[in-house]
Length: 429
Image 1 (tube, helix red, strand yellow):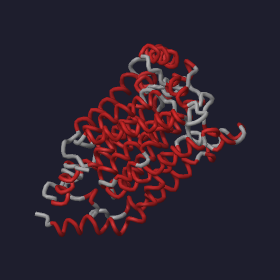
Image 2: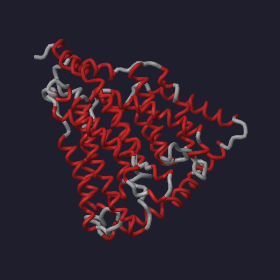
Image 3: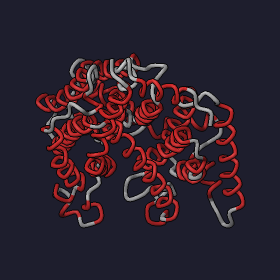
Image 4: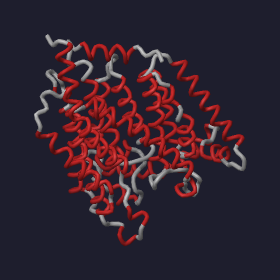
C-alpha cells in the first residue's frame, strides 16, 4: 500500500528538480510542430527554394534532439510516467510508426518524382519528432502537457492578433487572413485550438480571464474564410460540451454573447467589408454551400477516385496522386491515404483511431479530455484540407492523450489521482 506522503514525494520532487530543463524541451517540441514546412525560401528568391538549411523545422528538431538525449539515458524510475503499473501506449505508438514506414516503402512502387522525395523527407522528420516526443512525454507527462498547452494558448492569441492587424501583409487575394505565410487553413486550426484551450483553462482554474480572448479568436477564425476549418471547429465545440463540461448552458450562453459581440463589431465598423466577406465565404443557403463545395473540391475528389481504382490494395505509392493528376494532394486525408496507401494504409489508420475510441473513459482527467478534443479537431479538419505532414498534430495530441489518460487509472490506490479525477469530473465554474 502506497502512503499519500510517499506518493507525493515520489511524484512531486523529481518534477521540481527537472522543471526548468523540461521547459526547454517543451518549447522546442512546440516550435518544431508549429513551424510546419515553412522555409525562408518563401521570402527569398526561387534559386534557394531547395536548400533544406532554410527550413526552421530542421533547426528546431535538431535542438530538440540534443535536449532529449539525456532523458533517454537517465534513471527515470521515480518519474510519474514510469511509476509502477503505468501502461504506456507502446503498441499504438509502434503502429503509428509502421504507418509512416509503409508510406515511405511505397516509394518503390510509386511513380518516381521530386515531390515524392520531399514527402518522404517530411515523413522521416515526423518519425524522428514523434520518437523524441514519446521519450519526453514518458519522462514527465504532466509537466510537458501543462507547458505545451499554455504555450499553444498564447500562440493562438498571437496568431489571431497578427492575422487581423497584419491582414494587408498576410491576407490572400480573396481577403482571407492568415499569419506568417501559413495559409488560412493552417491559421484557423491554430486560432480554433485557442478557443478550445480558453474553455479548458477556464474550467481548470475557474478564472474567467482565460475567456477574454474568445471574441478575438472567433473573429480571426471567421476571417480566415476556411469553411472546412469553421465546420470542424463547430463539430468539436459541440463535442466539448459533453466531453469538457457538464454545465452546458453557461458555456453556450457565453459563446452566444461572444458571437453577438462579433456581429455587432462587424456591423458598426466603418468602411468595413467584413459582412460582405462573410456572406461570400459562408453562404447561408444550403444549395449555395453545396454548389461552392463541388466547385472547389470535386476536381480533387474525382481525381482521387480515379487513382484509387488503379491500385486499390496497396495504393499508387507516395506522391503518386501528384504525379498522375497534377494536384498537390486531394485535400482529404482519407482519400489521400486510399489513393497512395490503398486498403492497407486505410486499415492501419482505422486501427489507430479505433484504439483511441476504445480508450475513452468517463473518469478521464481534464487534461486528457482537452487533448482528445484537440486531436479530434485536427483529424476532422484534415478531411477538408491538408496532407501527411499536417497529421503530425493528430499523432502528437493523441499520444499525449493516451499517456495522460493512463495516469488517472493506473495507480489504483493513489489518493492524489483519485482527487484529481474528482476535481475534473465535478466542474462548477
